Image (cartoon, rainbow, N blue to C red):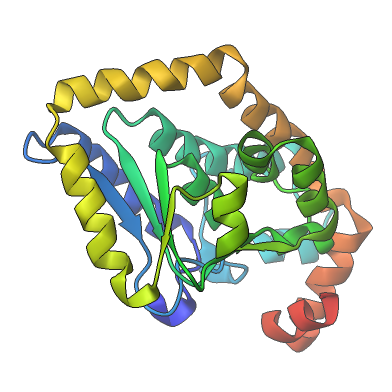
Length: 261
């Protein structure tokens, strides 16, 4: 969805999920690359009615109507479903039996960092930026738990308390990115690395990925993601979110985000 800066809505996420499952079972595929079309990797979750309905959401209304419409707001079920459904998608990438590479150019923000950081490798362009601005107005962000695993305690708290973004140089220095290349060489260099990995037998690659994943599972990787989701599900009760949603309704997403920042 390049015209929407690849903002993540449920129809799009379901298509990506289906593509992952097909690639996972395709014996001609050794490595999977996820990248964004157009000017950036992704601006994050879609804040418009085009977001659609999640897998376990019961209320049929668009999310902004649930927050701002009549009644007491979203139910516990729907707030939990909204967050955990996103996390389940990130865990699909984590649990995919084949290596998955995130190819990140320009902005990777909000919910899209969950997609990028769940990949096995991250290859970025020099203009890449990755961060979670919604912590300034909406919720702590379940994706912050992924930052914690990648960059450590103090840096994770810095990003969770400010909503700042890491530059490509910082991504490389902090261990978020494996490689950084000039933007005009990013595609070719990513494919070169993917082809090097693809020289190895697919079943062996699967076992190698699983071995490393299990080490992090023993330390609580996926459990910490799910626990963060439970905390984030309190977000719709925040006064800050209701204020931000009011600004979005009155001024539009772009103006509201600018005033927030």
